Amino acid sequence: MKHLAIIPGDGIGKEVIDAGTAVLDAVCEISSFDYDGELFDIGSDRYLRTGELLTEEDIADLRKKDAIYFGAIGDPKVKPGILEQGILLKMRAVFDQYINLRPVTSWFPLVPLKREVPFDIRFLRENTEDFYMGAGGTFSGSRKDARVKVKREMYELEIDLRTNSSNNDDFAFEIGLLSKKGITRFADYAFNYAMARGEKKVTLVDKANVCTHVYGMQRAIFEEKSKEYGIGLEFMYVDAMAMAMIVRPETFGTVAVPNLFGDILTDLGAQLQGGLGMGGSGNINPKGVSMFEPIHGSAPDIAGQKKANPMAAVLAAQMLLENLGYPEEGKMLQRSVRYCLDNMLTTPDLGGKLTTDEVGKAICDFILGQKK
Image (cartoon, rainbow, N blue to C red; front, side, top):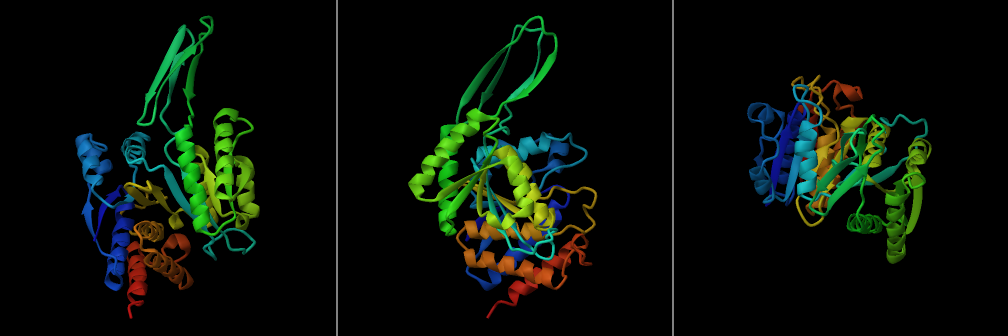
């Protein structure tokens, strides 16, 4: 019995997670997988009601779970950044989910490229460092000095910014930081992941020709790990990678990318595979509590209308199953999505006419049909 935290969150998150949990229930009926799910009221509704984001009680309860199944976050009634930083980013940091795994798979005929060449890219995005640390601020040049202090579980940083007192301009800044520990464990995970997939190289994406310090150190550590694991290493600048994903996506397998660039490239990847409604993701701590979610947002404009595509949530459930040691059940979910696409059992965003619940039922019916 696996113990799951179910966090529907906001907007269409509630609808797609309902479909996703129904799919997990179907898997339970035809396999050895079994779970209990505890529903957590974490999101904009509670925040608007109580002012609470992610509480210490939430964290303590979530630590007891085997995994977290998450819907979406965001509400137009809440200022942008509050929910994302106070819930989603905090959860990733608190549970040290330092790997964000996002598959980019050629779901034909949804792929918008002219060349029908299959591809299966696995983006491994470092999930806790780089420019998403919250290390930034604003200051006035009329002051002789300005300081910023950042404290995280892994490090404490204080920066003294000395300015020319004759310069009365105002400034804003954001600090990107990579630690040796963070890069090393990221590289270990990437090379182990590539090895498990039988691949001969890892592609490391960065902007080392401009950000020479942080990405220079990252390259050096990845080069050491490449020799240690006996697996090749390919360097790509992020702008070149964006172009290459359009013209030759089939040439990439395991791709390691820092936090900020990973956020951007994986959304490009989502469009390559058929849209945000086809993208699942995992926020992974290999030795702790991991969280799995669709990559789309809360889409308040269609919330409550049953138009949301649940396939991304189902593909996130696939990753959850694989992470918990049920790879065959995970493949079954992938086959169920393929079956629905082949038979136009889809929501309007993919050209179909079904509701969220109807697509979920079609997936469940396919899974239950596998029972011998």
